[in-house]
Image (cartoon, rainbow, N blue to C red; front, top):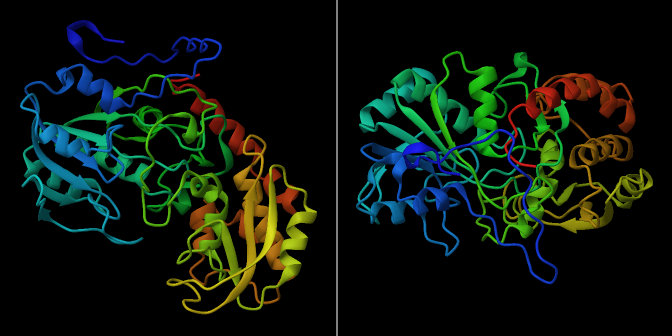
Length: 408
């Protein structure tokens, strides 16, 4: 919907999308960037613009929005800001590309990774931008760092007196529900700044509205550009959009489907499948055998089965060594609960393999958002006891979340 003056408007309670005619497929989703461009970039008129993005910031015909905007005289694009993995995506987990000039456009590229507060505000000030635009594909999990890049950039833009525009993209694992434990602020890090659920069930524009209203000490001048055609029950394959891996170990939408649960194995001495062709779907360690898959299947977790699997990671944990473990096979994604599945796998791994251990740095507490999951599992709690422990916190978050949803 266009507001007076041509700016793209957001409504908090949009009408439900019309049903597709019988025999006709639904039109594909139009992203926030597509709607911005179709409106002639009116929202950015007269502004010096910088874009926070990465390889996922593409058009439906797979052109990068930075290349498109740079070539369009209606946009005064003066800077690019790269997150973890970098603007062009050349860095592995925990890395970035640093400061450089983009060879394709000549634009200065600034590094935002691990910068926040005044240090990041100074980057925005030095870039000379008036408006910061954010367009990155999220994966739907609290510990996927791009949403905290969004948070940090919003806070820094407020400090620097810059306007902030979020161009929305789909949550690839749907926006049906928030799942899992809610972060305790005492455990806040770059894999979780604020108390949101482990699988938040929101789009980046919805998260921006939530952050601005609930968490930022100094709200930023915020505008969001919604998608059209996206429904909360949609998985990524319903969008008609091309998938670009948002990070090197997120190769497919199927990876994202399990990630909010199986990424918890980063906090253990088991491989989370990095260095394989199925990261976060393959899990294992030396000495693990069929007993883990048998124990996991005995839980009868909805929508998923577990196959005894053996693999040799090419990098990360157990590089070049053959390990045993499980592969997840999601057969009913509507019923599948990734966080409950991740907890069930932790519980059964600990019980079926004597070598199980948490990482010494207690990384599991940062991922789950408190010490509660670790201490309950160590005390012998079963899957129901662990997942029941966060019920009250999750209900409270769901109530707050509901106020900031843009789609039905």
